[in-house]
Length: 303
Image 1 (cartoon, rainbow, N blue to C red):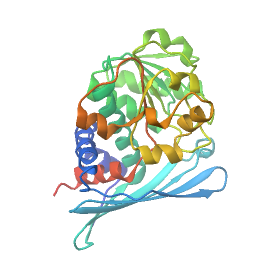
Image 2 (tube, one colour; image 1 turned 90 degrees about the vertical axis):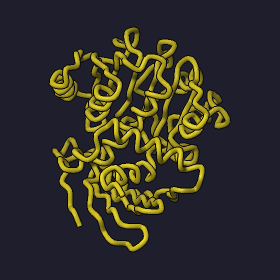
Image 3 (tube, rainbow, N blue to C red; image 1 turned 45 degrees about the horizontal axis):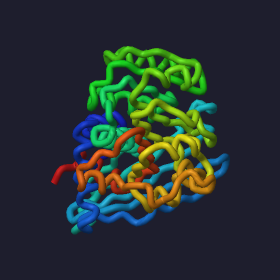
């Protein structure tokens, strides 16, 4: 069995190729060729959570084990840690162990990349990145690689974090501007990614018409990065309907406020099957699924 480091895991999961692998899994889902039960979430101290996520297709089975601790950066520790065990579906033979935090960062960013390719009216940007942690970094890399984004505005809870991400952007050949608040950049951007651990909205209710917003930070029913007003004026696409109904606090809050109905949400796989782009402002909300980890395993261990 191969045990891959974070660097080795990343090398097997380039964003554009991983977006293609996710696309294949999403399209296969309706045929019953891939399977993933609801993930198990166990609360841990200090707002932490333990996630257990299995999935399989005919060739590969995986189990992802992840812990998320929002308070860890203040202790000098990573927010997300985990592993993905990859095995042959027929025999159970272990093929490898992928670094879970790297898989999470890459597959989440590749999923947003896929959504932006399919849904964004102006996919080349400029981009506003709200949040400068691991997901902010991976989304910046994915959008630069897969969409050709060449300018990014960075807003973060700390100036230090924003400047570090801006420096990384410049190393990728992307012009970077640090802003004190997201509102400063809204008149200029066509793409927005919110990748924070905030439990309250980090964007205002209004963005420029035709903006693509990927909200990836919150995955609990009590947490929301987007306000109801923004959701009410947008076409809403989610990674999976069942996952969003359980964990997408942005949409759950908007429904309670009377600003959103689940009948108005579309699953990404439907967009991929039908090939029709929504018009106007688009909100893509993802909470994660073991299916996307399965896609990463398929990319890392091609059969």
